[in-house]
Image: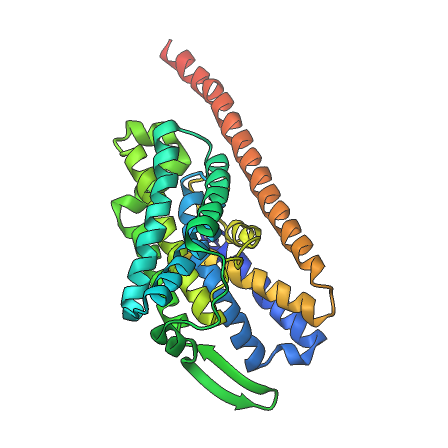
Length: 349
């Protein structure tokens, strides 16, 4: 039983991996073109940006909050950085571009964090509001022009692949940006598991008041959470622009549901206090495989949003049922305690 429990994982990562494997096998049987190197690399490439987004959303969800402004922060930070570099004719290199974008993203995240921590407002309402504010500010003060050319360092990175081979199905290539994204996953996992900051996030998600009484600086941690989400979103925004080889201020809009669904499917509790990086990465891969599979079997793209919506409802529904059963078990144990203690009183008398 212990071996099965470890295989299942604390957040059902093992179950999710089996579902993902079963889906790949089923699709490979239904359509042999699915199980090719080209399809595998295509799914990994399409998962690069969602994984970075999902890491930020995971951090917020663990604290019991929700953030829907990450896409707006991502395109604001990435587009503003590219616009600045092209306008002044200055290419600070990849390190400089990422540093500028992260600074912009962290600043926008700081706005979210201060409003949420200072006034104690619902995170969904605040981030919905700031999402509109960030988009409006970008269109007003940064611009809405489409850039087909990027600064030299970004353009060079856009054509750099880790693996590039020609197969019977055509060219199969894996972009080099998959490596820093993997390193980012390891870093976030270490922060969540091995640092006091990570423990404070789980404590806040479990019970905010209990975390405060335990000595955690709740408000300060909330601010840092949204600063970190803003920084991660900015990284995703720059990566998206590099992979698409252009800067469009209207990109990334409307993809928030996919990311939140992937994080919830990955085992993160929408009620807070639970979640892991491994489960989140598996959740992103599952959503990408499902979308790819539906396209391969000829399902219209309009139905992809429906499929993701159904996955989110199912994931949250399963979590709600599990939480209700756990609550019932706790009530049964509480009710049983006085009965168990009654015979001891008789013995003592």
